[in-house]
Image 1: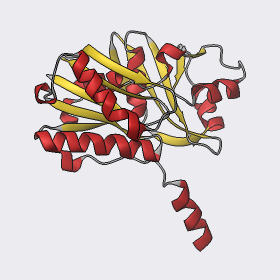
Image 2 (image 1 turned 180 degrees about the vertical axis):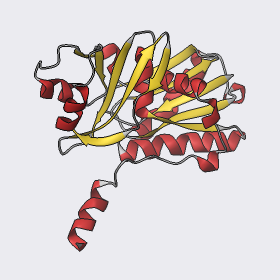
Image 3 (image 1 turned 45 degrees about the vertical axis):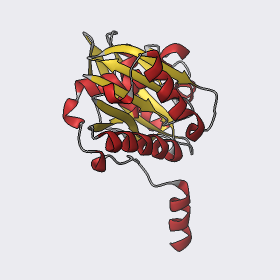
Image 4 (image 1 turned 135 degrees about the horizontal axis):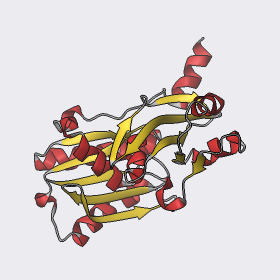
Length: 230
């Protein structure tokens, strides 16, 4: 099975072609450029490097959230369009789960977190063991202090990953010696991780009409409007 995976859920963006769990090609950019400008050229580049055309792809997947509201919409719209125009299935993958797959070859717990502003993070915990990633809890939006308290319940090695990892690491202040800040090479979500999550959850593939963004909380503008009306 050949999958084209896409991520534009945060500052970084990437596209990857994978076949049966093996990476064929991948393009990754973390320069803060507008995803609407960079995403489709990266898709074209990933296909070109793999010596494939869009017709060779069997299915599509994308990080559907949590993350940047605009970034998620761009990625989901791109994959919906590709899947619909080619009559292929697609899947929405948790951005946090995609991050965890960067550590699939470790024996550890991964605390995947993304900066949600206002001293909060989008987060979920995963256990990696024997090249298998198992979810410990659902994706959620919590305060950094609450997340730090939750991490204290685990004595295993914990990798802090995602663009919220540095905030959590700083908040821990060395109080949890088994919590390690992941290196830059594995800290952020990558489209290959998205593809690996899709290969492990093939039941997620469905008609493109069913693919929608996943928001753990309303956009800031909507929250502010609600406050004004209350």
